[in-house]
Image 1 (cartoon, rainbow, N blue to C red):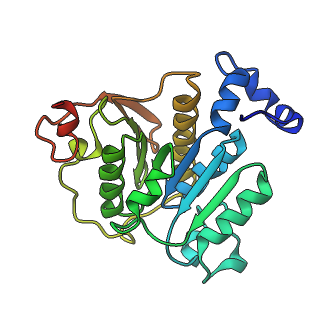
Image 2: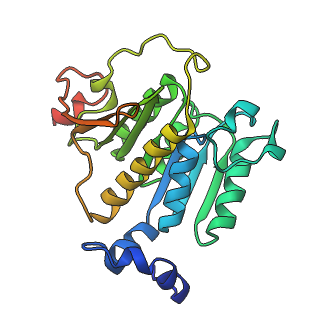
Length: 250
């Protein structure tokens, strides 16, 4: 049986004072395993705030070594780690920040070979991948296994956020049936933009898990951070979606 220790009660005391949160919400977080793909400027900051909130377990997925041009936004990193697998540093930083959280680091991208096993071990996924192929794979796997997915993406100063629940909301394929041509080094990234989106994505996870406030299920939040313009759009399911339509035909 999952319980809160005396130290955890003190650590999370201020958030447990929130309406509709309390000890019930804190226990729900402690029981939850979250998969975060693309642990960089976006995914790393999501993981940081989930660790701060007391999530039970984090599974961090990201291939590749740390580069100098990562350091303007990847707040879990330090420059002495340049040239080494960033996901190990992310795990070390998060463990030092909150040793109560169980953390697994996977130094690889999400692939067709590992996607089913990784998603099977989580209760919820956060999609922060830096390429469309990984995003499509995670979406398909979450739909197949009935796992909710928080979708967070950005393009220069614009950010997008929604929560996708198989059988209840459209899936990512419904939203973006075709991905545009894309070069991962072809657009600018500001750390504060990644951080803003990451904080809201972590909040989406917390709201969904605890029920303390409504999550963005069926709605897409679009943030133009250069003008601080925020808009929400209703999402529509594609009846012929090749990924999620079978869920609605049962």
